[in-house]
Length: 274
Ligand SMILES: [Zn+2]
Ligand SMILES: [Zn+2]
Image (tube, rainbow, N blue to C red; front, top):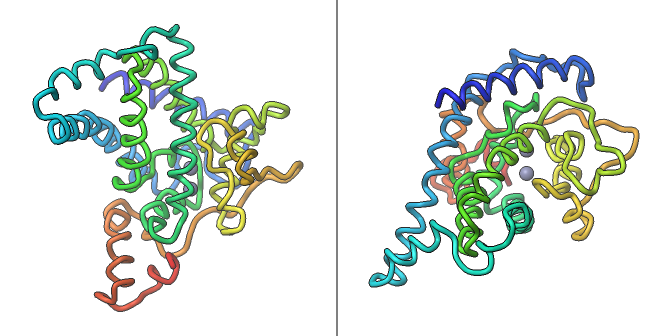
């Protein structure tokens, strides 16, 4: 835990200073953004959701193969087969590619009407910066993150390879949300940049439904969802109807579903999430 706090402190200083030098949206505050306390709660709660993957695996193994579950779980935990014997760097790249492919399609699914009320929370920040990177409803986080990582673990990769990609994913998620005007120039198709992902957060739904890849924008190019107009920077972020604070946001999707089912009178929330 102390290391996590030190890492967060380093990110806070680094992205705050960089936002003063090359901001994407100069009008945004560099350090003390409103809703910062709510986003801090999302960061710390994400640590607990990530631990649920082991419980999912245990429950699945005990249900599907009750007599062999202990051996299966031990093999998955230690790595097995060809995947665990490849060089660690190759394993890390394969894990990132597999995760990106799964998360690209999960992300598109969350932009559909059925799951949007959960994902709208991630899009609710009107001032997008690195601190909003983990603003996810637990249902969204557990399916999109814990679920996808657990699925990739089934392939048998070494646990060390996941240790390598952990810090990479943390910094990459923070970076793509950072208030920076970085496009990565000719590498814009190779790695997701702050400008690439900030376009995904704009209020206009015709633009918001683009740029789904977490790390490799080439997936958006292949599947026809890439959007990064040259010479223009994104602005005007957020969605209608989502409450501004943590507890209201946790309840928000259930309020929308209750309204859709006619169990509660339709409000602005349901209309915005329709
Ligand atoms: Zn999204
Ligand atoms: Zn985002």
